[in-house]
Amino acid sequence: MAEAPDSLVMSVLARSLVAGTPLLLGTLGEIFTQRSGVMNLGIEGMMAVGAVSGFAVAFETHQPWLGVLAAMGSGALLALVHAVVCICLRATQVVSGLALTSLGLGLSMLLGKGYIGQPLPVRFEAWPLPGLASVPIVGPLLCQRDPLFYLAVASGLMLWAVLFHTRWGLALRTVGENPVAAETLGLDVIGVRVVATVFGGAMAGLAGAYLSLAYSPSWIEGMTAGRGWIVVALTIFSLWNPWRAFLGAFLFGGIDVAQFTLQSYGISPQLLKMLPYLATLGALWFTSSARHRASPPAALGQPYERGTR
Image (tube, rainbow, N blue to C red; front, side, top):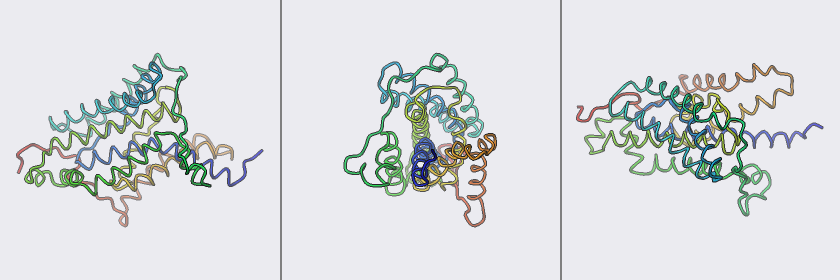
């Protein structure tokens, strides 16, 4: 029996929030990294390593939160490699990021061989928020989710406040816009960039952990399925603003869900698999149009040497 239209809409919205959560986590981290002037194209690899390390630790310890910490640590470690190569040694950021993606994907396949097909003994379950979970529409949609969803939402709000309403956020934006002026003001450009890059890697690892511990509690090779590249596009689509990241992430989550919803209407599955990537191209076109032109940090992708004038 077909679902009633209203219940179908609620189901699609709920699944869109779930599918958009890893995109939101990854985008928030990449926004901070790029705001410091560092471009990291290794998100896909860091998400993959985060997913497998989070699953492995949760599987062995039966503690999903330890899995989350392991995922964030592994993502941060890979990002630190990127930071050393690009910030300290001033190598090309694009090349380093692409190499990091290949390294992360290969490493995840190597580490995850023994876990393919293994059921996760524990997973993140829904945590209904007292007093809010019973509110019509809003309650089932937003207040009966898993704890990592709440963490993603709280992170977005907190990071927006940090970026635009704290001295540290001002320092980060200054480093990304004009590192020479930032150093003149006494800011440690290298240190700020390293911290922002490592933080972005930890968020990418957390996004991977969401995939293997909450979204689909298992490990399969290639489970990131190009989400890291979508995160890079969403960073541009959001105009480097955490508020806009919410819209972009959950919109793309809905597009991802549409692949499965529209199959029942006889649309080619091969065409539906292209939807997220077609939407990515559309988002990039939208943000680069004359009316909605993106303004990336002025020093994005440019290496910096202390004492440069």
